[in-house]
Image (cartoon, rainbow, N blue to C red; front, side, top):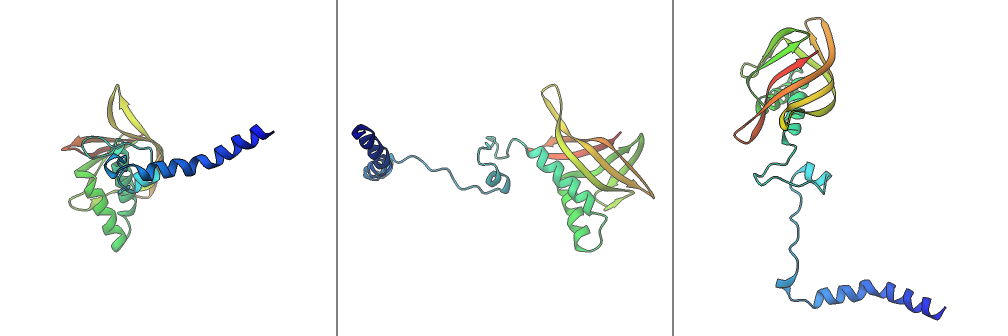
Length: 173
């Protein structure tokens, strides 16, 4: 019983002894601290590692989400609509081709015009062909064209241009 009491006391005192040892070490021998997270995604996922180029390894997902949210908000009036078009422009080229059930449409990003309206999207996943990332897939992409709505599985085609992922096309089955 006495042995157990001694072991318990040592285990309780160990953190205090370790703290005293670390405080006694010279400052230059202290391990380097990890810089604080500067990105919201890094703050949410502390184990996430960044690429050597400065962007994280899921930048294409962030770009696709920003594009889809912006496209959904672009039909709104006022500041919300302008913010939506700004997000679309930041994450896409001047034109994005949209193919819905075989019918081709265009989103004129530069002119802020579109005959399609994104209503909702769900369950984003990486779209790969072999080891190459082609963009993202969505289990549900719902668009409104005129007065008709169409929903189905879809793909958002993307390219890496100058270290930044941009949306080039959207296709809905």
